[in-house]
Amino acid sequence: MLGMIKNSLLSTVETWPHRVLRRGEKEQLSYEERECEGGRFAAVEVEGKPFDEASKEGVLKLLKYVGGSNDKGVGMGMTAPVSITAFPAEDGSLQQKVKVYLRIPNQFQASPPCPSDESIKIEERQALTIYSTQFGGYAKEVDYVNYAAKLKSALGSEATYRKDFYFCNGYDPPMKPYGRRNETYFDSSCTQ
Image (cartoon, rainbow, N blue to C red; front, side, top):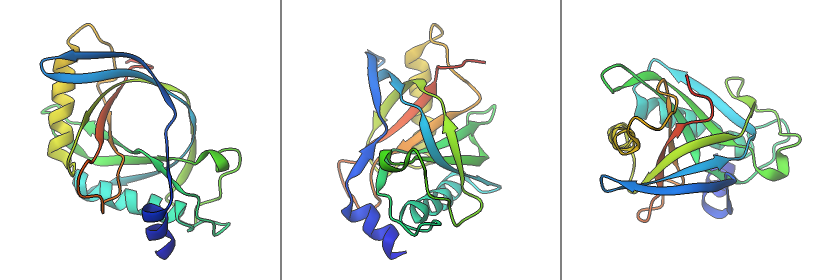
């Protein structure tokens, strides 16, 4: 636990490498199209709980992993964002199922430590092209659903992206009270 706290408060945060392809603004919403680098990610699935509760559980597991709860007992440093895959229901609300991802820091990409928690899997993910919009505050399910709807409206019918899930991303530790960064991503790499 101490490693997790030290890791989130005192370490530098490595961000998921990406390149902005274009920027847009429509209906008072700014958004970007980005190409995000692939790599190895720690991932955990949580089902049967509301989004906010499931997300918190998944994030804590991954923070413990990068904080030293792994076969090497090493604190790896923090990466951002913590990315939560949300699965929308037909009515726009979110299903009681999430998959939480954290990119393995560059120093450990080639050979990540094995998680002590068996529910955490190390996955190789390909590069993604995404549409993203940013907002502040302490994000909850209602905020992500709201910004996903705004991004969908701003992109209109011309943009193609996956409709069966989207990513809810947080960049900041919970102890940061202001200047917080959250984003909603739509995956346009491989459309349905």
